[in-house]
Length: 76
Image (cartoon, rainbow, N blue to C red; front, side, top):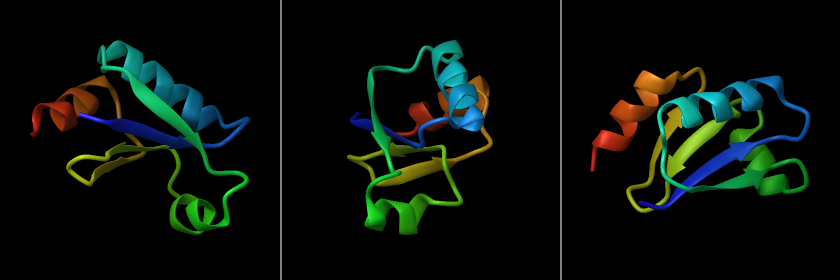
């Protein structure tokens, strides 16, 4: 599963999302910062942080906690 976390610099919600991912013991993921990308800003600007399963093209929008992350990861 290829996971991406869309986030911003200096985002307290993104920090909380990182904590939820750690608590869920999520597998490795790539952080994608949307601040300097107009297309990503248009798509995710008001939604960050967003966890995306790139292979399955599913997304988990904020707010989420460790339990929601585990449930998201359990779906294949």
